[in-house]
Image 1: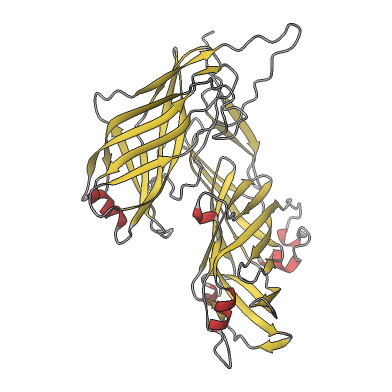
Image 2: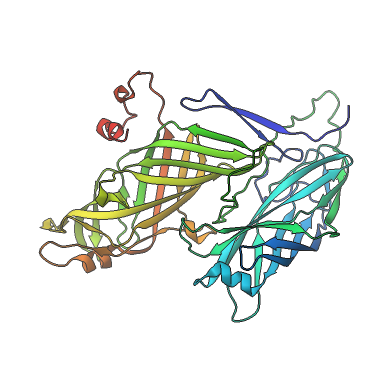
Length: 477
């Protein structure tokens, strides 16, 4: 039998009305247990730095059209590897000068450009071939006063391990780009740009000697070859690399209805130190939408659903000394039209959920030192409040997501509470509430727990998972 590189196939039970789903993920030989970017377990001393510039043609939207880009790839290859032991390719960076005309077309009236870049490393060992996906992030980069815009994409690659000894050859592929202005709204997606290597380009990137692992002591079984899924798009890139066109016919699409999730949400307002512990809510109408290549490489993975938060009473000290209580609500953006459900949207890659909510905050029943202060019927944040959270999540078991002041991506470091408007029935109070509460750096977290399915024929008779009030659960259906 010809030697081959191992692949991993994972099969998981489906949700709700789905009987079974099979997901196949390809990997060179299986990734090791090391986390992406972790120190290589088998990198010999004197890792070798390599760099390669490839001439490519990238097709931008008209009127710019096709452009020639010199794409430079840099990395540090391990001096050697050992079969069965994970190692990493470190220091991955891809840079290229973007012609000014293309940058200006992408920017419009904005001044900084950002996005993502993905390519594949082609691995070859004898007659056996495989690929490693490399998703990178292009940080926000301002357009210089003159000349082209130099963009650099960086990221980390998960550890992987060869299954056979020999010479491992590594080749590059042309990248795919997703570029757009910093802070672009969701309805303005990044422009997708596909590149191809020019004819005659040498795509070889280097080689690594793979050594055979020492045989286990006599009488002891060989260690198990446990593998984990191949690296998937992740990191902190803001833009999706998915084309807006329908997926090719050879992709695999899954649309899975999710069991309701109990959501326990907490928010902290920086200025007052107030902690808002929302009453448990139910995330309903959840769907996991996933498109993969035939071998399991994820192209698109989204988690969507709807939820509603009940009003909650909050106590805090205004200006650090004035006792204040108020009822706080988080409402959908279109609440004035009668909407009650907040739309939740997130992307799920490699077990990491990046979730987005747009909400309006409303204050009522305000009391200052026990004395009622009429805030009026519609004392709300002047603009919708975007909240972005990130964390581990599994559609089958739930997870914990939140903001983090130390996150490398500013998007997830906290949310800003906008100024208030329409506050005060007898006197103008908007500036008072704005001064007390509004500002950046506020934190939020949400724990999501799967609500077990009920066997009642009529789902309205199903009891909620305590402590969700029955009326809240049933109203969301």
